[in-house]
Length: 243
Image (cartoon, rainbow, N blue to C red):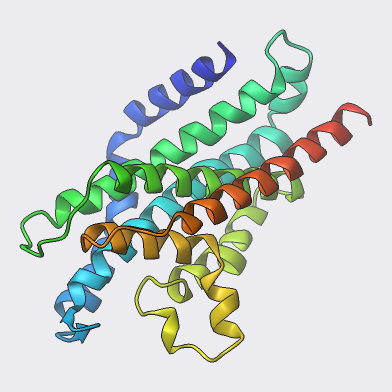
């Protein structure tokens, strides 16, 4: 019930700020599509560059949408509203509260990704988006929602959330197989960047969109990130309870 209560709160917030959330979700990715996709007429791997770019932009949108939906919100709730303290003394298990935050953040990221799919429908690219695409989007959203949860525990003030975006999210946005392939990077750097969650998501989304399928290892890597970030979150909660 605790998870459903948090999701209901997220739904009411989404309905209240629908236009703001939608505009924030589409403006930046739309600019990327116009500038890189339509403004630069080129090819990638023998196909129109848009066929490479659109799955990357969808993956990018799920990352930024999920992360931003959790990071600053949880930082404010933890530091100023003392939400975690209130949940600890309530009958609601803390893990249900946090799971609701992660699922809600992931759904927000999926919404951002789906908006990009809607915007690109008029473009006849021949790309395929199916159930696997949405599963990948959801899993990517849970990874970055959980990462945002971890960083919200580290935040000393609500202004730390934008800093984390600049330190982590922005570099991954441009490096992780979104606008250009990681194959063009030098050895060493290429392997590190390719192992990051957004690189795996972009690669799998691109494989499904092109009809070639995706490697199960991408899913394994995303699940490994999810487990690692979840364990770190549990560690923070355990310390909090024993202060």
